[in-house]
Image (cartoon, rainbow, N blue to C red; front, side, top):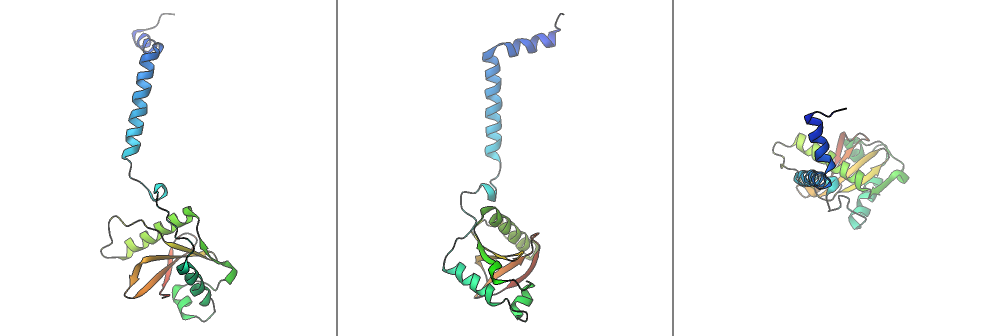
Length: 164
């Protein structure tokens, strides 16, 4: 069977190891260059997104545990269900913290008349409150008060609380 001109050219290109290697190297360089141009994401960030255990986290956990009574107005305002104290804890899993920061930033962006663009990426405290999450950004304040934003398990904002 005789090869046509197109097939002969393709056969010639791939039969020569040096030409094949040149093409392969060119493709690898192209892919690496394209990947380096992609914007960094929170998941690829070198800075941890989770704030870890500290005096502040212990105080946050204590504040949340203190409001877990049926008639507590802070809990009712934050729209967080009464949760057993054993189900309230600090989260240090980076993937959950990344998702918490994304949820917090989405909430800030959707409710602020002039949100920062791009929204900052910095460490936050994330608390598990039963099936809910409390996200505390030490940089976010309302006057002298700090704010904990609460999200359900699908990261829908449910309410806020001013703990201290």
